[in-house]
Image (cartoon, rainbow, N blue to C red; front, side, top):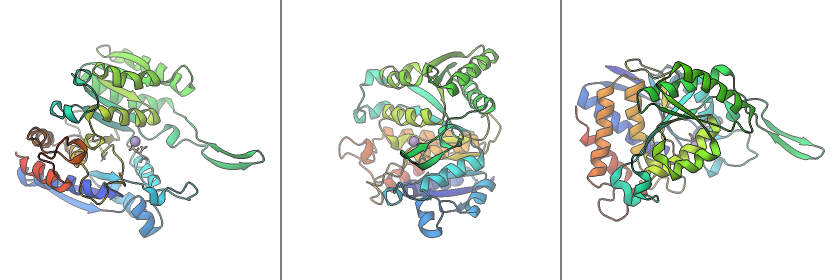
Length: 364
Ligand code: IPM
Ligand code: MN
């Protein structure tokens, strides 16, 4: 089959790792006989530099009309002036909102033979296999009022956390559906001891829980969750959290996998159901890593696994997705390591070598 894929590399290591993601798509095309028509666009800092805005309307349209979007990362010190009128990140937030991708799915996996590269003890990591569902188009990131003001007492700033019942329900439903197909456990994250949004969230989670009697629901306060993620991570199956909590918890969860460079994400505009294709936006959870950009040492696995999620959720290519995931495991099993996960010089490889290894391992 033929598919249109929008490719938006962005800034820093974004373009480097996205190029490897594209390499993986091409390997899948060759092995399984599909056609991927790639359409490239600028987003983020590079778009500010070239076009004066982090997202041109035509790039937004390109993303909106594609079967799926492969995204890299945006941002960097060059555009970090707190007084700047626009930021690279605005382009990403606009895209997520425009595409309506409210459910950001971030699977967290532990590769046993990366234990040496992990700062945590192997016994803590035993049995870790979870999925974090992060609400992506609401909360503090988007709600109004938002801004900075001069006042007679000095400057003040405001961000607003606001959620509607509908926004909360749809993302929790994604969590319940995923839990049903997994170990049947859902941790709903909130700060209900302090925040109104969280109290509404907890009520809705409890109500939805009645529709899913086979899923064991627990409410966990976000601060306690942060601790338990490191202390007893294996207890979690599916975690659902609002936008900001989910952002913070998933960087923490990346530590379980040994490196930020390994974690992919799928942002979906609907509930994932086997056999149904959903509009999606696919990006590593890591950022632009300006300190290593342009050196050819970034880990392309997060982008590669994001491609696998794209094949599964937006293109309906389940077997192809599994073959990409298997290829990553085989290459890691064979000992190939980018510097972020290497503990010696043995089979230490560059970004492109890692991508080549994975691409060559993909088979129908
Ligand atoms: C992420 C990133 C983004 C976010 C930034 C770059 C806006 O940290 O995808 O997790 O906060 O959502
Ligand atoms: Mn983040």
